[in-house]
Image (cartoon, rainbow, N blue to C red; front, side):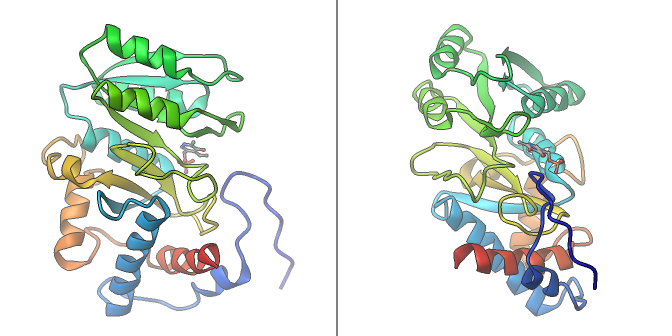
Length: 258
Ligand SMILES: Cc1ncc(COP(=O)(O)O)c(C=O)c1O
């Protein structure tokens, strides 16, 4: 076997031999072993954010952008207005997703080397009472800059608004603790800091908000409410699950926890 390349990118990245070995068999989507591993992985992801009491974890097929799009379409009501904080590509991408979905949004843009300030967010929320959701990127991968998510979460909560966090390139490496950082939804994927393989993203969503989100989604396959309700019902995925990716993630989580 040729030596694996060392991937020095944010993700996909080099995975361990144990993680790769976890994929060397096949599972049916209704295998009890698969259903249990899926359920347990969802709990373990919630535990990383210390969010087991307040939130639920909903995995979704696809890359990280798929789960970002699913969260924005499902959690933000159709007539709500969002404030998107932009200091790089991934803030821009959330604004673009809202634009394509036809959801109202305003943006606050700072240069790529400057994080958004919590004071500016506070002032914007004071000025615009129509904004219901603030959308922020935890680590803006464009530059690697770490945005001040604790302060942004504090002012957002103080103003009674909801915070959505794209934690794609930070989750599992930089703490995101639901008790300390109030957020309605956080998104990440298997193949970044958790060191699983590509193929699924997941959202950690406040249970109450998800329960209220029926009918919000603009899309069938990106309807996170429906994905959650179906999975809670019979433990299965609505559509073909990325079985091997889930077993690889479970193995990567073993190593993460160790
Ligand atoms: C912060 C952030 N958000 C979203 C994405 C999009 O993820 P994907 O390329 O898996 O769709 C990335 C990818 O690097 C990212 O770093």
